[in-house]
Every structure is written in structure tokens, then in C-alpha cells.
Length: 120
View 1 (cartoon, one colour):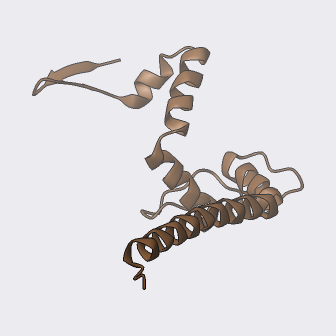
View 2 (cartoon, helix red, strand yellow):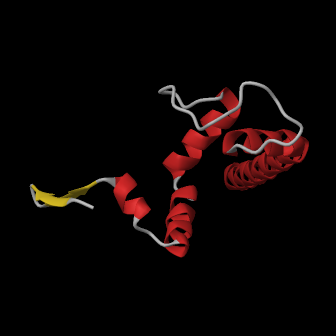
């Protein structure tokens, strides 16, 4: 692997670096990347649209198969099977957030009403 120092930064081929990792080191790197917001966004784009906004995509077969084995095919199948549960969970999460907002708004209105109440 070739590593160079340019402008105070190390430059190297990520592909070469990955090739030098042990299986455990690769899993650690993948775990870090899998939780990165930018990576999650790009994977989500592929799951929904079949590719990222710049037109990149992981391997996908041209035709469906009974048992998908490529990463993107398998992920899309898994999401499709779980979509009802995922939608339900997201709707429940949004309803909870809205209920909390409604409760705060009502409390603020009641407090304002108590402060501005005219007696007599």
C-alpha cells in the first residue's frame, strides 16, 4: 500500500487499505460506516430509488429471484417484507411527537389564560 504525505495530510488508496484489514477490522469499519448519516442516506436512496442521487448503486440483478443474494436485492426484499411494520412504527413515532407538541401548546395556552384573566 502506498501512503504519501501531502499538505500535512496522509493520502492513500481506501481500496488498498481495506484489502489490508483483517476480517474483524473490516467489520469494525463497516459498523462505523453503517451508522454514519451520509451512508445511511445513500443506502436509503438506493432502497427507495434504486440508486443514489448521483446515479451510483450497489449490485442488483436485472430480474427478481425467489431468494435474492446480492446486497441491494436482499435489502430491498427485506424492507418490502417489513414495510408495513416500519410504516406503523414511524406513524406511531410521529403521533407521539405531535401529541407532545399538542400537550405543550395546551399548557402554554392555559398558562397564558391564567396570566391574562381579568377578575371582576
